[in-house]
Amino acid sequence: MALILLPTVELEPHHWAEPGYDARMDTPFWKEDWERSPSRWNVTPVAPGDWHVATDSLESEDALTRLLMLALKAQCVQGFHEPEDEITPDDEVSALCGGYALFEAARGIPALPTCCCDLGDLGAWRLAASLGDGDGLTLAIGHGNWSARREGAAVVITEHPEQRGFEPVTRTVSSSEELLAATHVAERALEAFRLRLRPVLRRLVADGSRTERLSSLLVGLPVR
Image 1 (cartoon, helix red, strand yellow):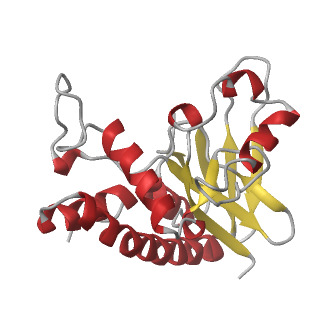
Image 2: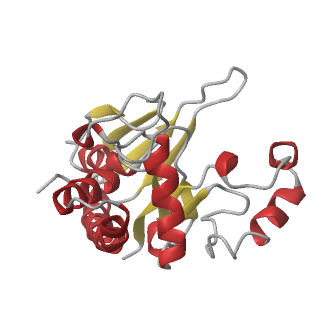
């Protein structure tokens, strides 16, 4: 398949990077910071210096444990919260931050996830792939600064910048059918990721019924 919609997790560095990381971001040294972190994550970002890594690269129990501990504490899930925090009910747990990187064989990466995207965004991409000719919509991902429009067989994806002085960036996906097929492949990747998370969650969360719910919610899949 020439088109890939790659599920990614955002490893926001605030809770794990070396002190002073923020002064090194957007510099050549940031790549060095990533290269020093394989003992923690053993992953490669989808683009140099980017915080997003493919879900299929998160395989080791150590990396999955670190990821889940950070995510469960950040969302104040029962058993992973400070005494003064309000506990988030399991059914309100959000999908992991990240989103979907769009790859085309001929042009590399037409689109990377932006701020506040998460693994629950797959449905938005599926809606974009299912548009009728001439129809458009705002992609409900991140801050809502993405839109899609169907033009013949193609889907035109536009990123609308949030800062002044920048022009919208448009990418054209040549085949809506390929984009729709890519969403199904991405969903299978999510299920594989859920199955890798499940035994780690079972070790971290004693209640087995919570494990099943949390594993689905964290990857943005319906709770079974």
